[in-house]
Length: 143
Image (tube, rainbow, N blue to C red; front, side, top):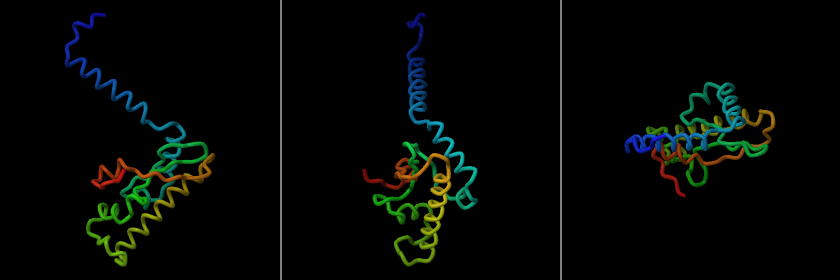
């Protein structure tokens, strides 16, 4: 094979394609994770399906499903909810609209967890902050 005939732009395209393939292979979920995410998609209520954050399993570690969440101590619920619901005053903890969306977040997160826990071989769920999703939404995340 004569590599001297390949132009530099073709090398760049091949390198980008190779890097994309490697990235895909590294980040693609394993079969068990895909199975759990499929269960979430098929068993979710309309409320969970319509929720602006897509609850999902990131990976499985033994009998533990690691699920993504948009909130934790680093990103309190009011910061995330303020972006999802900009018309609601999330700084007022007594605001009925804020209380309602905060309660909804808890309900859909519990439903997602219950669906995953009902699957064979899963005994617990551990939540992991979904930093990529938060950053895509413009929510600053502390390292």
